[in-house]
Length: 458
Ligand code: PLI
Image (cartoon, rainbow, N blue to C red; front, side, top):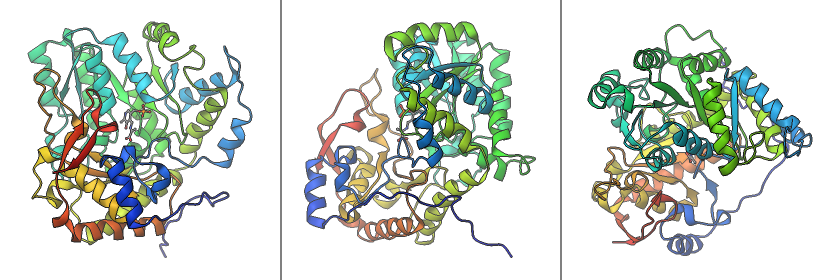
């Protein structure tokens, strides 16, 4: 008989959370300018703002922290981290950073020159910021299916090789220092790419001397989907698949705050020692010495332990993605329009389908995110036109085809009962959707505006 799956752990410590009153939430969201980033966490009931840095660490990780070597230079904990990255990801050169965007900054600075073009399978906010900040221009080469919430294509994170070839023909390979390939593409709804596609991308790029840099932030979760969906991989462990993903790349930026099960940390990993030397030269100015890069010794210990733990069996990632699918299936059953197939790290509600009465320049996803908080105390995040920002040349909004409310599920933090409450909350807002009004800016930051922007109702 086939039984239900359950989490491969039991709970040893709990953190109380508190349900707020409707009046408290109305006051809090107005004070936060309708931006869930500006809420106080204590005013949130179930916090699905992000899966970044919000994981619950294991007893092994907590005990590893006690072994942290806080030497300024040459810490033992650094070498444990080097070993973990070499063993699990297979990269020889490790450049530690305080988190993912630190690695993106260093990579962009060492490789991108003024006027260069960096193709990628959809943008990510901080990644594109650092590419543009270094003088580059991002060009989206993801497959068209990624922009269609209803397409059930199993690998919506794939690179469109024809689009990539066109970019190479148009600008010339010598203006393309690297392609940035993201695993389980965040802004597309946590959608995977296939190994077949990554391999073909790598071969095409190498024919033109273009490097392939992986955003490995959610590569483990991508490996799980490859195991489920790609022909020939059902019997491979996620550890084997992850190593194969990395084998078709020249390096990776990593936000360890996701797959790696820690609350802070990241790295840039490379194969070429000469590139690593350049990265380390910048690292000491922006992050810290090359043997800690912004992390404490105990952070590096917890990270090394988390890297081993995430692949020690397939059960961890099966339960992690199983929980996301559980919530997704409950919402699909209730008729909520969302990105399908359900992605790896969260549920992405199609705000334009929910709120057709709000035009995109009145920020439907921002408005729906705020309405969900007000209704239930569940905190999500806008992933639409506000996150997309403005074109630096024209000053106009970028108008992304996907206008989404993301409910990102922290790893090992919430139970199935919490997921039930979230599903009920979303359904309640959906039933009262006509009452949701559009928003306008009262404050718009120049860079990465979604973090600190403020709004009022139109
Ligand atoms: O937040 P950082 O600086 O550790 O990592 C930046 C970053 C890079 N790539 C990808 C795909 C991310 O998802 C990412 C951060 N994501 C956040 C914070 C999120 O909430 O999704």
